[in-house]
Length: 367
Image (cartoon, rainbow, N blue to C red; front, side):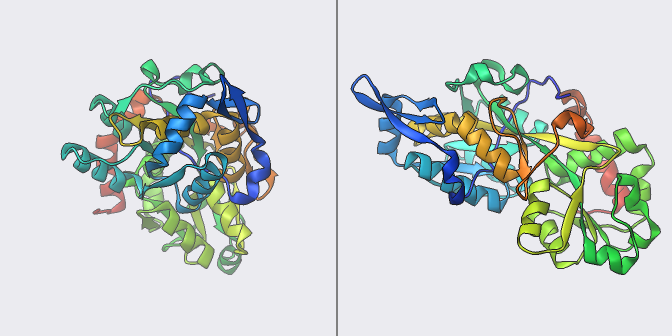
């Protein structure tokens, strides 16, 4: 059900310190030195690990949400002793910063982790990454490997329908089961929240899904509802938790985190399809901390890193040996059971500019 693509990705929505029981990490003898092993896998040779520890830190530019980014820093540093620094920003803004700093030959990132097929392809075409094959490359399905090991897919991220139970009750609306339910007249007037189509992979993928699978007229029908348009998945989630919107297109991890914080929030796998998009991860060429960057790449694709991402981040791992994804301590359904929609690379890139311009007109969005 996943697409065969020349684009693959990743990003690291990783675990809290409380998840340390998952790691089963150790240092093993390797030619008189110590290699880094986690969950029975060699994540880094003694030579690489020693060099990475001397560098001491890895600088990551990512558009993974704030909670997952913090969790990733804790888990990776706990497992390796290597500190994490860097920048976290929404995909569009992050991409602008990367291009600006790269153009000025002042990009400090060792790792870039973000989604969006078109934006990522542009970075690849600019020769921004250096090839690195992770130790468990053979475990990763081919559709998640970039040409010549220049990058990998890390996670496949679903978009679900999240809702505030109290606000739905006030509006006299039943919990939604499909995207068609967002067209209920009682939800008109900023009671539905979505990110705009040019926000990044999440916004564009949702817009593409709605037109491609729900019909050419769905955009207009939803626009007639006067939805709240947001530029950030995180801020939209906060508004859902506070009851400023009753329904929102959101990742399972966002909805699960809100529920864990006590908000009356739930989510549903829409019966008419679940938009999916991949995150991408690559090691920046000529970076300041190349050895620490390699260890991070290895960790992110290992059974350990993938398991933590799936259990804590609410996304689907690409490593078949990893643990199954969870939200709120409950397992998510197998990916083939949720009616996933992952557009072809040709659609994701070829239609992007034209359709986003049309979406902006339909929704009256001026970013």
